[in-house]
Length: 246
Image (cartoon, rainbow, N blue to C red):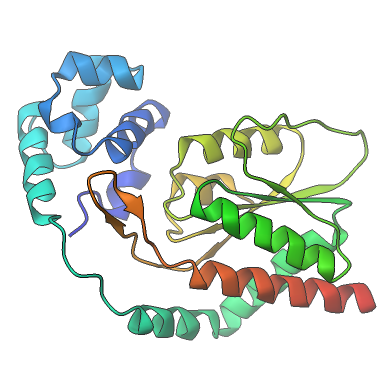
């Protein structure tokens, strides 16, 4: 069961999103923090934390912490499910005329761009490297950006497109890079599991794949399937290649 609904996340302002991101990244720590400690770590006021709690359906911070602890109790280690059903659901969604049109639009942005970047860290970084190599193999030179501190520079009058990969769409480093690219006039394409995520809202267009995020172990290693992202990268590359032949 998800602690935050898409509607609740959409209702958050910029400061409240800082609280949401911190909690998302430290779910096992926050239940034992005082409200002032959480406010300090998220760089907001205690009033902002209280407003966040109310938007999450809680009367106050104490009730919110109780809900967070209860959620943690339901997230005990379980066997990983077979991904076939999830993959079939994705393929059904991507086979619709609406999604086909979105892929065409995204391919057009990439084909027209003079510089193409594929951005991701962790497992998504591996996908970014693969996608950049695959595009380059097909004749559209692309660079992968897997360093969250990568300096984004601009050459005047050069069109740029960045494909940003993030399972949650809430990774702070990816959002920071997205802001940098956006500020420099770069078109943004988000490949993420949730069309309601912060990254999706920042991007010019989003290719969602609706995959359930899966983490295991005390370190919460990411085992979310990357097969949908892999499919989308290859599908985009094929469409870009066909456009280059026209």
